[in-house]
Length: 298
Image (cartoon, rainbow, N blue to C red):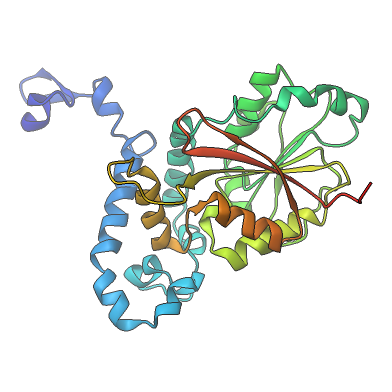
């Protein structure tokens, strides 16, 4: 503790007695300390990559149940999210970490949700937004705050049962929680918007296309499916930000990948959807990709 206090982490209240300060509280697992915990886990998996590559065929890395993370944990046969569900504390830390990290991936000023007000108010029986794999509801809360409400319609939060069951009613004011597996048919039909934010990057192309197809099966003629993800550059530029490449490597550990815009265009096309417009963040790293069902020729 003396060493930590000497560098400003915690404080000494009396000889050999210590207490938190603002900086030490940030290291709590439910705050930014959870990020450090996750990075340590990823570093452990990366250190075992030589062993993983010696023990597997090249295409094994595309199998969600043979990910490097599963190999390092001695749990091959389970997906990353199935492994998380084995430890509720780890799952809770993971959910809260990504709730905090969401602040670093702005999106509210990218897609014009507010511009949909008239359409939503004309048909309030249709849900405004279905957030597929939406975690703790941080995206819906941000959209609701930006729009000043939900225009008299529903905001529906979907995620796996372990996530939904961990939420408290007071955390979801004005939001309807629903347990849902994105690999099963979408039960909410004809919503104005289906939002997939930082979901598809958890999976390789075959699984991502399946998720898109399952969601598209519920869309109406004027429904929008909006994908929000970090984009890889189409070509590597020396000296550019390492963030996209670092997250791509981390995702490879659990069975996922970041994609370039052309990569998203390919899976959108394979899912039978058509691209409408791409809304980029100011830093250019993130984008919201608006898609819809193919429109009949006029």
